[in-house]
Image 1: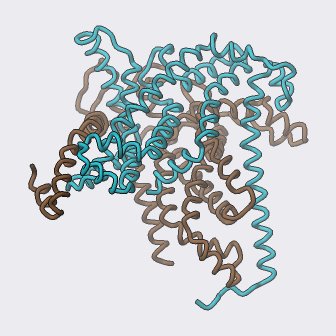
Image 2: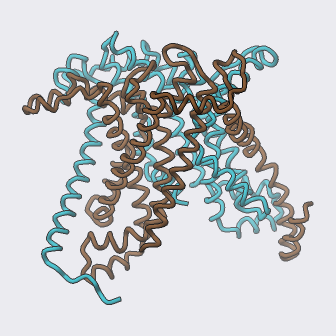
Image 3: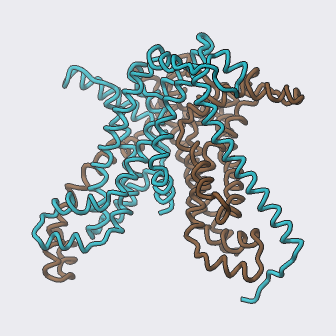
Amino acid sequence: MTTTFQPRTRAHAIDGAIATLIRILLWVWVALNLAVVAWIVLSSLKTTREIFAQPFGLPAVPQWQNFVAAWQVAGFSGAAFNTIALVAVSSVVIVVLAAPAAYVLARIPRASAVPVTTFFALGMAIPFQAVLVPLFLISNSLSDVMIQWVLGFWDDRISLGLFYIVLSLPFTVFLLTAYFRNLPSELEEAAAIDGASPFRTFVQIMFPLARPGIVTALVLNIVSLWNETLLVLVLVTDPEQRTLPAALLNLYNTMQFTSNWGGLFAGIVILVLPMIILYLWVGRRIVEGMTQGAGK
Amino acid sequence: MPAAARTSAAAGRSDESGLQRARSRLYLPFLLPALLLYIVLFVVPSLASVGFSLMKWGGLGSDMSWNGLGNYVRLFTNPAFGTSFLNTLLLTIVGGLIVFGVAFLSMVVLREMRGRAFIRAVVFVPYILSPIAIGAAIGFLLNPDGAINLILRTIGLDSLALAWLSPDLVFKVIIIGFIWSTTGFYVALMMSGVDSISPSLYEAAKLSGASRLQQFRYVTFPLTRDILATAAVLWVINGIKVFEIVIAFTGTAGTPPLQARTVAVQQYLSVTGGRDGVPDLGYASAIGVVMFVLCSVLVVLVRRILRTESIEQ
């Protein structure tokens, strides 16, 4: 390969200038992101008057009662409970359903394994709005049937959790199939030769081996379900049964009447801070899972 | 035991074939719970959506009657839907050009600049935050008398202190907010492609005197084409679904202004009835189908564009 790049000093000077400019802009971007997060946290500790008078100043006295207001008056305590319960149960059930399916799809050479994997992946390409009306119908019918014929009661949160699970299956199966496919097969064979049943081999050997992938799947589902808003708004009518994003939206809509902006920012922090803490804790896994899951 | 399994067993060694057969028994019990749930509650509903979209169907209690393509005709003759359709296209196409422009620029320097790991970690953060929270916070800054306008007035740029959240302007602000909150993810995605390029290629390029821009042009860009195709497809799927951030910026569970609606918002209003409380489920199903078609068309288009370019190379 004979070179086409003559060392041209002027071109390189321009190149250096452009690179420096991009570097500066990247640092500006970083500063902006950190500033926005810091500003939200600080605002949540200010009085409404301070928020307006010194939008970028420090609070004179930390207003912890903003959090009390959001937690008690604006119903964030119930919303937080709903969110945590829904996210915890759904994300665990997703993995419990997806991991075995992904395992057999990745490691048992059946003729149908490849097309079924593709069939799951197809679900990732369908915007879920395409199924919104049927899910709305199913949710309502399920509620009617359960109340009238089966249980005598029903809770929209159960339907919501059910759909969270179903809608997360395609991505999770897809992600975990890739993980299981890359595991070494020696241990699996050794376990079988030692007389472990295939089921035990999966539970005691392959599942633990795939732990990094499973934790990634768990975390990614936690992030996306924590922030989910559209389905809650459509399927759950009782404000008491709704999750944090819906509670924040509701609080935001009452601002023109209550004007407790400190409380609003406290609400924003309650919604955002758990995700930031999760990101500080397992951020690398979140980024890698999201990018590799997409890249594969 | 199905014939396929028996043949594959015969092909293997005899002890292995026993193992394979034993493991093969796990196939259906392990697969079916997830698969059935997926079929019954996702695949069948998406087909049902197509059926519903051909029906005249108001709310849940009301009767359904055949309407042919009536809902689709109504959709495309309805100026409100037309606006939301153009908004969605605008956000997906213009937003996409900006997001990938930023990603390319980052790729020029981010591979070997100081603090790169930190930068990559921090620009990603907005992507995991609730769009509702982002909309509420930034919406507050952009109030007519909010902090942004306060600053603009203080430094004498009164003419730039606009009514950012007014119906005519708010969608542009939403696009910027959406770009801010998602670009970090696409930078991370593209950089994961850059990471897998062998450093020796950059060494060779440097030895032959290639500048950074030339390294990007001749090494980085051609070798991240596959991941670019994937990223662009993801962008399209996510762009068409944009809903939360619009609701958050326009700050109302009732009805965002016509000028600021996306297709997903328009559908949400038809499902719930919006503030007037008149749901129109047949119509809403048709919007869902249109979203799916729009998504497929854009995905095919994106793939086609990226492929042609790689042939020209």
